[in-house]
Length: 292
Image (cartoon, rainbow, N blue to C red; front, side, top):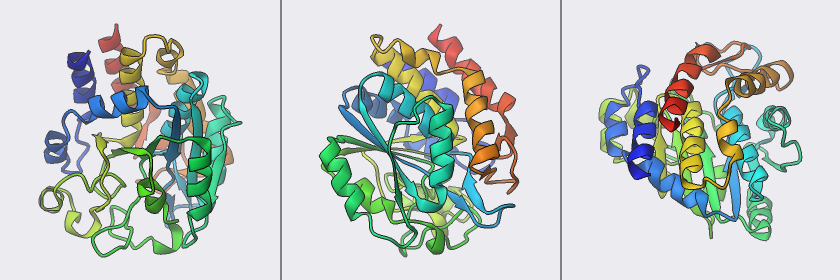
């Protein structure tokens, strides 16, 4: 099982021009640890949403909420308690993604940029969350400022959900693709500074117990689903979620009704990180081929 999960992880480690090869090497084995923690979870809280103020229109990024919706469907169908936390300005996109995934009843906890996560922390504790999972979630750099990959200060658009991530008593899992996401604090800062563009400025200092790095964070969701299908064969539904049709439908719904935008092209189109869904599905196909 470990060997198969490592081969799945290798498919995620495709650099798309962000200088992530060194990060991939430093986080090898992260998928095994993440999947093991999630396979035993009784309650999973997912943190996502990355607002893009310079887009047309300013909106949540497609990367993050789409993968979060697939993961939420996996946990919900397994009878695992699930909640999603995001910024209030990303909440509609997350809600649309969850509905498109067939789990519109999963609660979305919104926190305003600059707001207070205390009530959400209490709600997660009351719900029995025992694993917090962040996917494509901007986190604070060494100076406390959250930034995008262009180095732009996003303080006015980011709720302090890193405090939710670290509030416990839950274990922590994170998925990221650029060094500025929650969880990347598990990687030595000097490594991110050396290899990732603007890494010294944008590198997030919030660590995760288990960090899944990927060329695109959305691929990390594919990898976690695939690894869970290996570790939990009784969760027969999980492999069915590795479905290009469902995946594309979630992203299309987000763009139409969220709205949501591509974080790289800054456009309201059904793409993730400037790549169309057919391109992402080549990675998905490689993973499903490994599963057999």
